[in-house]
Amino acid sequence: MTVEPLVVLIVGVPGAGKTTVARALAERLPRSACIEGDLVQHHFTVNGLVGPGGLPAEESTRQLELRWDNCAALARNFWRTGFSVVVEHAASRRSWVERFASEMGDVPVSLVVLAPALTVALERGPYPHREAGGRTVRAHGRRAEAGARGPGLVVGHLGPDGG
Image (cartoon, rainbow, N blue to C red):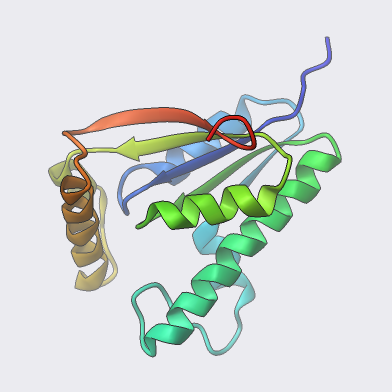
């Protein structure tokens, strides 16, 4: 039986369990790859890394754009050679998810949003410094402002006909 390769993007706030879920899913798929957004930026950048929320802000944004684009390029390359791909990445704004979908072009992408309660996300730490916990609190604040209600798992489809 031939299994069509798929691309799954898993997003959520820091501490949501993205890496755990992504790895578990990838391990269950034949011919699969797991791409971790943090690893793409932190492993390949030898000098000059400015992480999310870092200063100068313009450079932080530029590096986040590069990180999302690199994740999409890797996913596209694996998919085109017959691999299923699971990409995990923290996404503080819908525009990052839209950027990824745009970079994927005609490749269908399934979206999974992990949205644990704030207490669960903070518990999952340990954060190497207090700022990561602060980002989680701010991300949950943005979710509330956008009308998100409570913890949950949202699954959807991105692409030319899926939104």
